[in-house]
Image 1: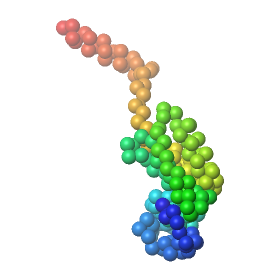
Image 2: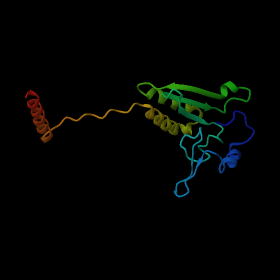
Image 3: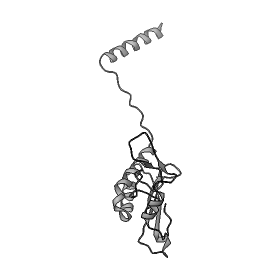
Length: 164
């Protein structure tokens, strides 16, 4: 996340870090734009709009250390230099059985500080919460038609063999 106090504009910071930082993921043989793995980047696109390094109001969404929920950090530029406590907001959101409440909290919090990024934040939060869900067990299909007849015959044959 960007430092709380900075005398440098976000455009200048982007100009300095755009080509040389450890978060850039370049694939030379793909025709795809470079990606970014920085903490405040919601879409993983390497661009000044989504950069968490150069943004004056970065939004950081990541899984909690326990692996069940989200950690949300938002920095607002509305506070003055002396109001450090009001400048940032950090929140641990626990995952409930239904994720609607968690997602609505993310939407409201991010929408207040960065309205242009709330859809990307919802997408990132949804992906994190989906990755934390337990995988569904595959459903056992009942045999029908020819398979049902064959299963009954095999069961009858096994029952007859066990009686002997």
